[in-house]
Image 1 (cartoon, helix red, strand yellow):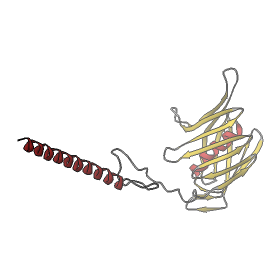
Image 2: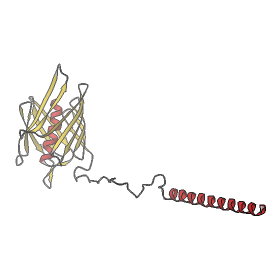
Image 3: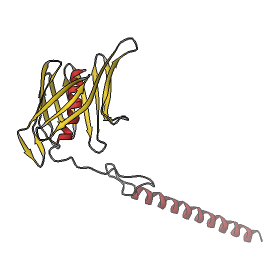
Image 4: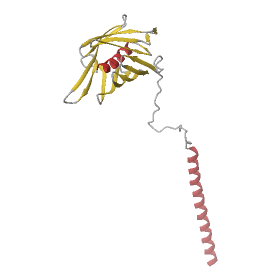
Length: 219
């Protein structure tokens, strides 16, 4: 009887050990399988989590896809994809024309401040915006609004601080209705201002960039 019990206990222990070994082996195999399916360093996993969206790539418009120079009266900038950035009349400026929204933004560092403005359609149907800097005790404002355009004459008008400014456009050539490397000239406060952009842009682009560049220049 005693030998029978010892044999039974031994068999039970052997079966338990075998079960534990099989369970551990299965768990280890699962971990190896997980490790095998994980991406290696530098690889991008193909599977996407729920709700994850891959950003759509939008190619740059032809004529806006090269970095061009913007040079003129106290103006030294670069232009790329409806954006300009650089020096304007003693300040550092960045401007972007959002063609889809039909508006443009200006951010600049001048007078020890970060100044921002947006040029867009206003509630009263006018188009433009106001650049403001200073503090409660002293403020400097420059209003820039669209005042008209004459595509045939290649001109457009801006109202800058109640002064009507006529901007003439002289391109090197025309390409599909776009000005190629245009030079823009105007008179602000009795002083001539001009700048040339190495780009291909339409009249709408010209007006928006005029608001950004001439607005920053006047402020």
